[in-house]
Length: 217
Image 1 (tube, rainbow, N blue to C red):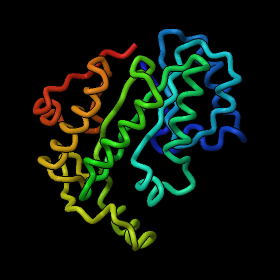
Image 2: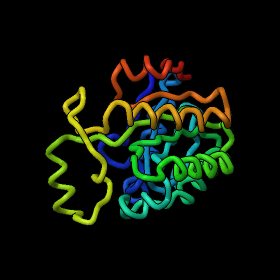
Image 3: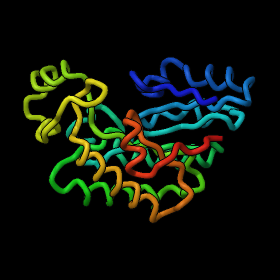
């Protein structure tokens, strides 16, 4: 069984104050058949590094090109800080994961994500990666006006977005296919053994990409 945190809030951003991670690691030490995941955009790993974990904890980071992080992910760790934190967790015996999510489509996206992937593998060896997920930008329709009102200078809404299979605004199918296909090929050039999967995508997309859900440890 795999249990993940960090879907609606950051798993580690406030860990210096809460000590939440130490409690979770201690709890899951009793359940060796469960893999527990901390999902974060922070570099707050101090508690993790001093914890006596039992090997069934994965620490994962949502990553994007640094320019997108700077423009949109306010108060989050930089890309370098995230990768440095991941390397330290590996040294401490953790497996790590990465989430290319949400991938933002824009003019020149391919060049930026190729550079991101190059930077990732310059720091992290494929054998230390538990899994990598890929998901394109999507959100509930009501959030569009919230984004426009709070961040009128944003550029993430510049591309056309349509109502998708799950009633969320998404890029068109062909654009999403192009993004997934190219990123999967970029990643696979570094290793054919990476466990890759799509996040919140329809079955038809998996089929078109000839992608199967990997077996997780």
